[in-house]
Length: 141
Image (cartoon, rainbow, N blue to C red; front, side, top):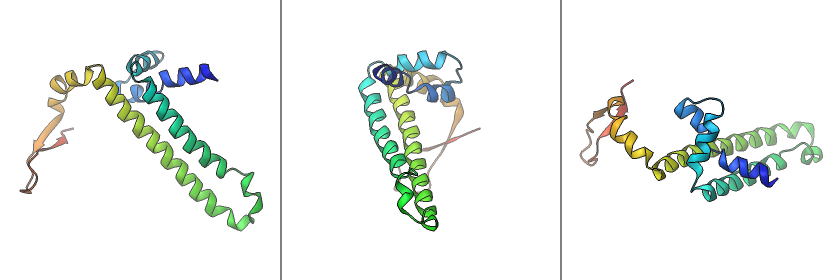
């Protein structure tokens, strides 16, 4: 169990690396292991937090606990349980994406991308509202 936990902590950003950096095979695993270095405690905490919420949601909505309900009343708990599970999985994906960006900033890679690569992808649109003093960036693609 500890070996599986170790690999999951090290490879937790592999899904984000596949999407964000278009890497395939073993490259996302090694990249994730490099990015998580120094942030393993955060990755472990996220794994445990979302694992507990997702595990409890699945356990509460399992078929063993619905044996006491009538067949007509099982549809609503299934819909609510599936919706809660979907939200927890969505939050987990968003949290892994934020952790990916934070790890890139921690390793000094994000500042280089902002300085070099993002300037040609965005156009600046001034705001019409006088209370807003910043400029909104919209993707030019």
